[in-house]
Length: 476
Image (cartoon, rainbow, N blue to C red; front, side, top):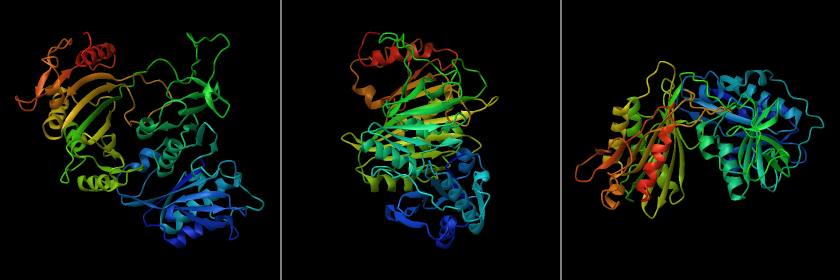
């Protein structure tokens, strides 16, 4: 059963409601505040944490509880209060459930998961103690070694919560890998998938047959020397590692009719006090779906209604440090983007990774919509480059622990400045079967390169690689 609980309430849990929840372990348990009051912890007599509670978050975006928890949610706006029990302490889970049940009762709402939050009674904690927490550990870290920080979570979707975002930062600062351990039925939010760095970081999935495997590659894993590593058969060599793949991961794609349109692009804006950020993403969203994004946030759940002004204000307040954002669409048209805004010598860069989901019978937007989105970026938003792909993947955009196959390039766009600085007519004389098309002013156009875009035709990657080699000045 999960060690995380969430109370979803119409009213903001007031201090008395939170105190009542924290007294679920009896009046002799100690309460302490950290992170300027944004985190409250319930401790044992030795001061070791049993339960950690985040400050309530006001969610003003429809569908986030359904997307991340599979739970029914109150009408927006509502309050999201999250608690995490310390792993390895049996009674701590009951404490978390009682905390959520009390908060939901007093503030008017529900608790997730329902089976964990069924009792309002004081939990018997006599003799209960927690293991010492290393000084470098964050609330979400369950195991800390000299190589990795390990997070154990049992949720429908592992999201980039405030806790997990802090853990990513702490692991990076300590130069440690981050390994997220989940049961087989769990999926990743695209925001977590995009942020997970390379080895030794990985998504570790528990499996009845093989024990553990990597949810993104399928490699069978084992715990050794302070981290999860791939299993190496005795007959393996450096030239032929023969890494076994979990049967649950699979190797063939069952075509369910679900598709994703994946778009990644970078815009580089001149640094200017009047610069408005987020407009590039809004333009693409509008061209593809007919509507702007629904909401955004600096963590998941995305809790704020979409606002260019607020996005710009947050980025300028954090500058020169980079700003990371998650942006979501309405539940009726699944869409999710991660945005990284960075101040560089070239100006202000926006790096965007975006995907929209489509079910069986829903038509993926065609070339007209993609070209309109590309033209908007090229003419109004300082586009540097853009890649569009089509994938056989889940409509809800979450990442399952099984093989889904790669996307296939649908189109590539080179911004006007990149075209201008390329020597000669290299940008136009390409190895592709179709000629590039002009976008924007004829005197200074961007170029749109059409590619196959058929998920069943992986030759699109060969075309894309040849195009990249050509544009970089290599042999075509």
